[in-house]
Each structure stands twice: as C-alpha cells, then as structure tokens.
Image (cartoon, rainbow, N blue to C red):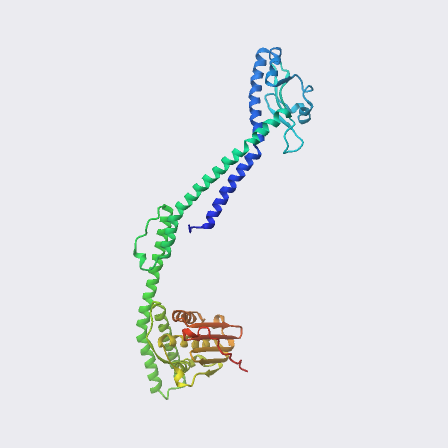
Length: 438
C-alpha cells in the first residue's frame, strides 16, 4: 500500500500503545479492583445492618454478625489501633464508608484490610460497623486473581489483533481512492483538463479533486491568454520595429552633414530599435512550445559573435570598458550545424548583459571550438543602476535546458563568468583558464 506509510505507522503505534497501556493498567490495578468491589459490597451490607439495628436493636443483631465476619464497636476508643492511626474521631462521620489496607510496601499484599461504616442510633449514639480481613484470607484471593491473568492477557492480545486488523482494513479502504486521486493529479495535462473529474468514493476527495481541477483550469486559461498576447504583440511589433530601424539607418546614411545635436537623438532611436528587436525575439521564443525545434543550419559562430559585439557597441558609449576578443580564426572550425536562431539569442543576451552591466573594467569574449566564455572584470552595475539579468539569463537557461547544452554562471564581487557549450557531447568539458587582466 502506497498511501502515507508514515501515517499508517503512527495510527498503528497509537492504537497499539493505547491498548497496551490500558491492559497493563488494568492488570496492575486488578487487586485494587477486587478491594473496591469488596468495599462496595460491604458498604451496602453495612447499610442493611444499620436498618436492622434501628428496627431490632443491638442485642438482637450483634450476636448474628459473626456469621458475616462483621463486628460492632460502640465507641471510637474501642476501634482497632490501625483504624485509629489512620482516622481521627472527627473524620469518621455517619453514613460514610472507609477502607484501610495495611501493608509493608505499595506493591505487597495487604496484611490486613479494614472496612469501616460509622452510624448513629435513633438515640443519637455513634457506633461503627467494621469488617476485618486478615492475610490468610486476602493472599489466597489475590493469588487466585493472578492465576487468572494469563487468560486476561490472551484475551487482550486477541482484542489487539482484531482491532489492528480492523484498522488496517479501514486504512486500505481509504487508501485506494486517495491513491486514485494521487495518480489522477499526477497525470493531469493541459489536454486532460477538458475531461470531467472522476469520482473517488468520498465527498471530501471529490471536493479536493474539483478544487484542483478548477485551479488548474484557471491557471491554464491565464497562461494561454498571456501566451497569446505575447505572440500577437511580438508578431505585430516586428514590422514597425523593422521600419524604425531601416529608416533610422537610411537617415544616418543620407544625413551625413547633420549637426551633432541631431545625431544624438538618431543614435537613441537606433539603440531603442535594437533593444525592442531583441526583446521581441526573446518574447517570441518564451511563448513557443518546448517541443519546438528551429531549423538546423551551418552557423559561423565567430562571425556571428563579431557581428553581435559590433551591434551592441552602443552600450559601452561613455564607459571606460575594454573588450578582448579571443575568437576562432580557423574557417573549418568556425562553421557548425546548429539552430542559428537559438545560438543568436544566447550570444546576443550574454554579450548584451556583459556590456550593459559593466560600468568600468575589462570584458573577455572567448570562443574555443563550441564553447563560449564571457568574463567581465571591474565595477559591475547592481541595484537601481542595473536593468537586471532576469529575462535574458532566464531565456538563456531555458534554451540551454531545451537543447541540453551546458550552461554555467559564476558571479563574484568583482567579476562575472558565463560559459556555454553548444554541443551535447561536451557538457562535462572544463573550460581553459583565462588570465586575469593586469
């Protein structure tokens, strides 16, 4: 049975422990129960004797009391010394009933037991009805009780076994629908959300399944709306962004003699257009299904890296940042069959992050076979000065997980190192160390 084995152990341990404690307690108290029963019986007998004394008097009743091991004491001073040691005269009130066990230790057999019932005659005189049981009577009785204990233990064990079987049967009966609910929840997908919710035999489980189904449907609808919005918005933005970039480029070529005051806004338009183009491409990828695989084509990683470095140079304007490019020069090693769209997104995000988040320092972009390593040293922008790594890095991780490419990022107080291996067979290959710039 797979359902909550720990819960099963807790229930079984609790029930077994409770039953054992009850049985042990009753076993230890067996002798006391015997005395309690005897005490109640003698109390009722004393009340009957008191009524007879009121009706017939002491002289008629007292000679007959030896038959039932009962004695009458007409004063407190006449009582046995053990009784007087336990009770003061003021403590023995009429119609009360008291019992005394005299024994050497708490677990030993009593050497003598007294049962005292004080009463008052019709003339107002106090007298005491006392039953005394010596050791020669009590010990055989207690031994007889102990002789019967094995049968008590046997009945107790049988009771525990029956109860445990009942508990196991109950838990198994409950476990089946709960396991069914667990399996149903695990197998829920976007396609199966349209199917009706099955019944699980218990109203509580049915309500829980309905809540799970309703919540997942609500989440699916929200995600679908967001995905559709991003897809539509991204597709619709691609055309105006392309128009902005092409016209900005045309103006830059046609307006060679533009005053410097006009060039600065034009540069801002170009940068904003590039940023919007990059963001649009990113959003389109985020909204695609993970099963989507772009077309594989020959990619010149070196050339693509150089183009993207040049494309993002505007991010370094006004900064004291130097770039060292350690790229492949062997033409045969430069071209690789890769999904170009994904490679471009990764390279663009990592290069853009390195340039955007370094205010002063040095950036090394190294390409060795299919492994790209980017390290930036110096003053890294954090907090309010930074635009954050969130979306770009998240997208890079998602693409690398999708393509089973190795991705690793290490951030310290003065540097950030990012490594990507565009090959499933080289995920465990360690990068060559790069020298720290002087």
